[in-house]
Amino acid sequence: MTDTAKFIYSDAYSQYDFGATHPFNPVRLRATKSLIDALHLVSDDQLVLPAPATIDDLVRAHHRSYIDMVQHFTNLEDVSNPTLLKRAAAYGLGTEDDPVFPGMHDAARLAVGGTLAAAQVIAQGEAMHALNLAGGLHHAKAAQASGFCIYNDLTVAIHWLREKTQWRIAYIDTDAHHGDGVQQAFYDDPHVLTISFHETGQYLFPGTGSVEETGTGAGQGYALNVPLRPYTDNQSWLECLERIVPAALQHFQPDIIISQHGCDGHYWDPLTDLFATTDFYAKVPALVHQWAHTYAHGRWLATGGGGYEIWRVVPRAWTLLWAEMSDQSLDVNTPLPQSWLDTWQPLSSPPLPTTFFDPPESFPPVAQSFAITQQNRETVDRLKRLIPWL
Ligand SMILES: [Zn+2]
Ligand SMILES: [Zn+2]
Image (cartoon, protein in one colour):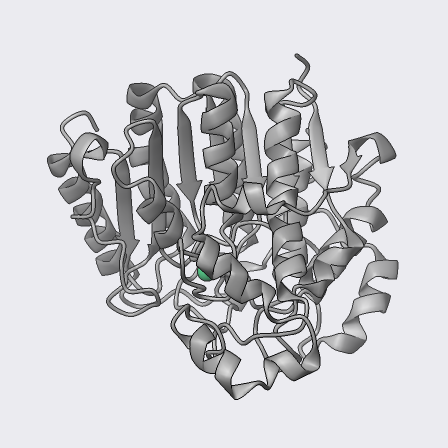
């Protein structure tokens, strides 16, 4: 098997759209793909067009009654039908976070199909690495839409891989929010290790992800959580990753790493309080890539996730991710192509950055930085005391 990478993408991804005022804006995927194309980072033979996930795929992770409910919303009358909306509310649908829209089933199952396509190319040995930026919908539960996530592509793909390959799967989540849906799906499963780094649930949705959540039954010890203090910076977050992940992978011996790369922990992200910069979003993929080759036979499936500064942050963060996966030299000093800036600047009120590098002077250090780093260290120490093999 060669060290090749596939980029899973469809223009139809942009149909996953909760409306103009909703923060989860699919234009971020187009802006990212446009930046990747402007830098000539993806070739025709790397591109894979996903097929929508089928009902048989979705039932691996979701109750049939929930899928039926999502399927009800096909046209404009459905989304304003009060009887239907009342029934949908029991499934977390029709809320401010997860409004209903016509065609939501087809839009959501295409995002799942993308992560399944990534799993398939790796399982079949066509590529070592595969990326689905429309995936990473880590909050969706078996019978519940949550946090902008309708179907959980990660849970579906992990179940699919377990069924087809029996691989041991390590899931690493660096979205600013706790990866609660994936954790819940495999909480009692010793074959799936979930590790989530996120802003502490004391201050941020979904409120879970404390150090004490470590799995149950046979899965005891196979769910790891590092809740970070608000205003955590690159250095402290990376230190937490390095103190936990290699030891966990060394012990767990995964056959594949699946990573979720939500970039909503960036300083400029409007929904969270973490202080990462693009330097972090270059270093995390580099670490995960190295870990995949060291601990997981080189197999690495990556997805997108959250990211709500859709012009200044998401395109750069996820282009850095793809460049790393596909072994193309791109560093934080690479300038952004003028053609890309000309296309997207009119849509962003703040001026777009002109390099991948976030100049440190734009991110003044916080006074409590030392205390925050210490508190995160203590959190990692607590986790290490709870899990003897860490
Ligand atoms: Zn590689
Ligand atoms: Zn998030």
